[in-house]
Image (cartoon, rainbow, N blue to C red; front, top):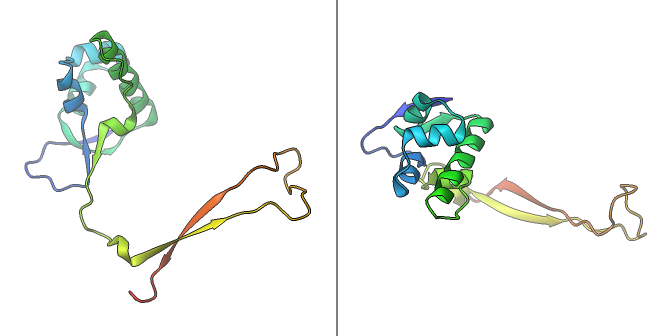
Length: 137
């Protein structure tokens, strides 16, 4: 787990919201540590970070479980998900106008036999391709 300390006027696209979630229900570092199984020092480091360079799935899962338990203990039946821990703001890098999104839907074979034996014939998949916009090149 890599964390970065708070920076003033951070212009990053993805912000870490653990501090905000804990403040909403006045959850202490010690309480979250007990409910999540994460060491109190690690909770403190995570809480004081605005940016997370990387976080393991295990730690993220434990935080969500611990926060959900803490919210329930405070009378809020909300389930905390990884999406609650992050806030995304588009920063303008990589203009999305440079890509066209094309949708392709696969269809069942006309003979009615699925190429995947033993699997349902009712499966429909949708694939999205990001292709460069020729006009933008």
